[in-house]
Image (cartoon, rainbow, N blue to C red; front, side, top):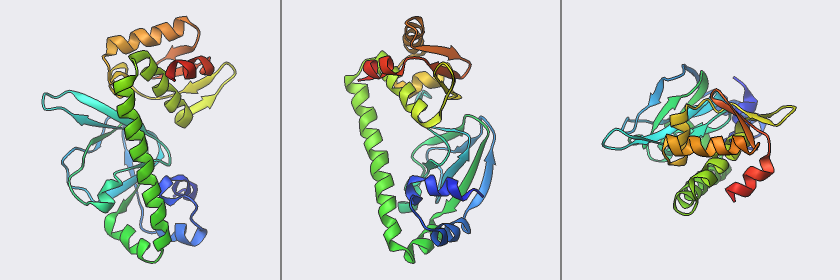
Length: 225
């Protein structure tokens, strides 16, 4: 197991070698293929997962079967952390969008670990506050921002977490279909595709299969503001 993957996770940032090693003893590796559902809304759950490699999409499904994509998580990010404080039904669907390697941690094991390191609980509160802040930002964007602005902001967020610098810009392998990208910004695929085509025509980005190359980040930031 990669100890640095755990140390970069918000819940466990800043841990010393002893604390991290003790935590790793409780963790179990798990591999998930692209398209595999890790868990569904309503499933019982008492584990959190740290992403070692790959990406997962987090979403919810409406009664008529439509999906709303809430977020995409990647390396060193955590999914299912609410189960550590409230081991009840899962509140979302989580599916791998690429081959993904995970580390799992049970509620009971984390509680045992925390009893000996109560100060580490501050990290848990900080991580939950970050997740709540992101949720508030997303709700605000849906209310106050137009679709092109939401698309620009989503691409910049994906670039911050998954982007790799290249000679002509930032390559962002988001691994999402056009439909999934539209769900992420809460708009129709047609509207999102129109915004992307406009950005490409202006020379702000270049579209690739399940990826995008950001060519003019400043322009995108201005459009996302």
